[in-house]
Image 1 (cartoon, one colour):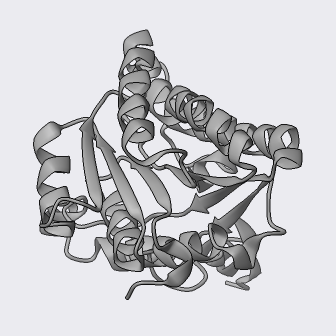
Image 2 (tube, one colour):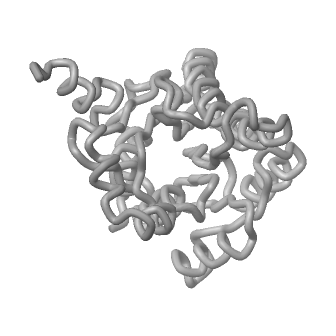
Length: 265
């Protein structure tokens, strides 16, 4: 349902065709915003744009490698040229390679850090001048529990820790310009397709993984959407420079470990 606040607001989402990205893009579009979808694969963002905006007036789609400065300059020249300054920049794109640190090649490291940290830096650099000129805007960085505790994926985790630092830095430096920067520290999110192969191999995997979360389940894209909608709204105007944990209590403590420690047997 359209929301008066979001009418004609300009929102950019990276990693737009993924499970979290598509859910975010769908919500902002339904709220009435103009949404620019950025993804690595042209066909995937084009298909999502067709689904969200058959009339082709509210949603644009752009294929880009967000770690590539030339790609980012091109995309934001298109967005600014069509719609003007960006109101909300959602840095969502990231991926994690399963290789251990010792088996991770420098190229794999650079690719993961490039998407999860260099990309948000380039996107923030692209939107900040317009936000400053207009006197406001929000940058939302989708981070991870990996920034806070070890759960594997060393390159991805290091990038997310850097992203949390970037969130704080931008918030402090550009807060006087009316710009807020906030993060979402997501736990394991059950995205469509991503878990299918694991569930086929082990139908109990969701139950087993869910035991590590105090609330007893994994997160969903809708969980991310609900928090993102609030954090980028006027109701969150006094929230900046922080990463809000959305992790089912994972970083608060481990119920399985606690049970083992407290067990008398």
